[in-house]
Length: 181
Ligand SMILES: C[S@@+](CC[C@H](N)C(=O)[O-])C[C@H]1O[C@@H](n2cnc3c(N)ncnc32)[C@H](O)[C@@H]1O
Image 1: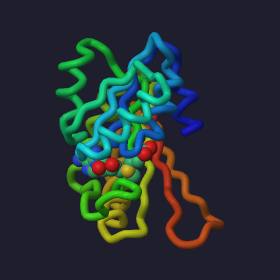
Image 2: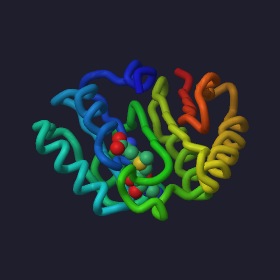
Image 3: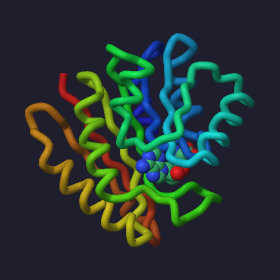
């Protein structure tokens, strides 16, 4: 998240594509400040409700929460923030911690949504994707997201992949796609 925060300024619009328990949403809300906006999306009502509660407890009033799929983020954006380009779109893949593990991000939808996010972010904006390959869908998802990202045109995007080499098991891995100025 700290790399992502470097790309965000007060007053920006950012998208949390998988708000889950609201941890990332809260960080993003603080980063854009009162003059900024966060669009927080999750497919599950439970996640959206948990996020709303976190935000309410923290007194964060700059977040619009939406229950829906990140596949439609362009439509959510034009409905709520027409004519604004996000500084960042954040994906934290997999299932809701403490929730139903059967409801997880799906490879085909994720690949298409990450590609869409790369086109939606403003110039000098960032798409961050945290991936977990310790479950079968996560392994396939990682492979196909990376395959898509490798093909992004090098004159328009920088693509960086980070893996924690000295950790046991399948620690989270991070993909950053930044849009060149
Ligand atoms: C690892 S959790 C996110 C954790 C969250 N970033 C946090 O800070 O608590 C992954 C989330 O993705 C959501 N999800 C799965 N498929 C989705 C989709 N197509 N669109 C949006 N959210 C989705 C799940 O419901 C789950 O809450």
